[in-house]
Image (cartoon, rainbow, N blue to C red):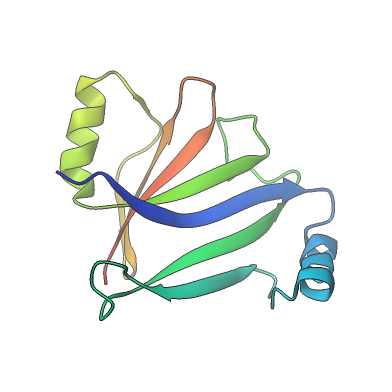
Length: 125
């Protein structure tokens, strides 16, 4: 079973999320909205398949990364999230929530051994 297939997103907390968006837009040319930006790309193994990676700032007091106290979270793209979660449970990995299913994919959050929040995403391509 393939596990992680790529980076789905990079999320980090900031004292001034909008100010950071503005700085990245001005200095690095990243066109941002209040939600950050999305980079689109073609799959290396099958260029007809498209994917995306999200880059987003969050307010410093955001609870979205809880229970982690780290100021960042990485979203990994995965295949077959249900099967992967079963394997993670067998390995004793801390599962934060239940699988959530949206129009754009399935999500679940886990914690790594150093307390970092990880978001797993099975996109609906």
